[in-house]
Length: 247
Image (cartoon, rainbow, N blue to C red; front, side, top):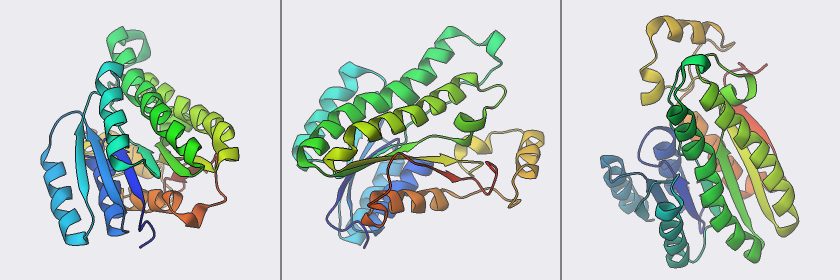
């Protein structure tokens, strides 16, 4: 029970990596608040798991990239929860395309959700953590943000931005007992990667030294580590969960 007594806010919690992080956090004893853009079946599953685990799951609905939508929702949840000891910024979207053909709206939507959304939520939650002189923030970046990927200039830029944001915020908050780290997943089996054409999938797998995709459980376990006291002296770091792709 590595997270017993902790309260966590996880964005993008209705599916994929975010859903698995919420599930693992509750298995480790945390009360979880999950933020999604709309009500989902995933939230029902997590609430049922919470009941079995003896903890609690609370669903929040807001457009994370819209200040008028997300700020009041997160502010109210923070007050009701009595503060969050852990924040996981996982919400993200893709709008892939070659840069010279990319629509401005596709560029702006990805930056708004993936990067600005993280800023908006973190600004609220980190301010409370700083006052309490305790907390852990985990940002979900990507191997694409570290090494780039053709056809994903908007996504790569947003995830690279998260790396810089993580390191800068960590320096601002470290003296107040708040840690900020990032996870950079490689090729992980999710609904999002399941839509990749077979030829591209094979190329990805060939580039992984471990010769297999990762699982959402493996990313979630890393999030548990960074959220727990096992990582008490770790901040401003980017942990790759990529099977060696970043080597």
